[in-house]
Image 1 (tube, rainbow, N blue to C red):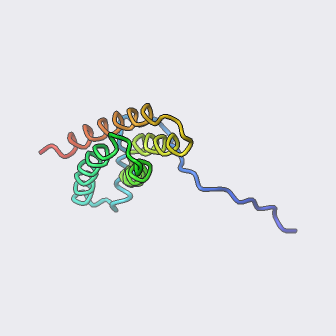
Image 2 (image 1 turned 135 degrees about the vertical axis):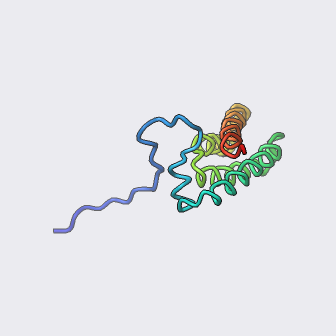
Length: 124
């Protein structure tokens, strides 16, 4: 007897417990194989990249969906899941033809929270 297998699309799992930080540091540690120097380098790069991407999306240009997608991937890589979710919201609003202004405002807020957390981590 062959078991009935069904295809399921991959879906990110939410944290088991609410995070106290906008960054999932356990996830970041897994992604950097526990290399503290690499963690700091990746966080600094994300902080800089996110500012540029938000600035590029401010006027919601034609490529705003692609920019949001890029930010979403980077955010997932470092464990900034609220940023990733907010960027996905911008993508969805653009895709469905909704006004993305509210979603973009949420994305800006999520990025600001993550950047503040990164600044605290990188503080000498």
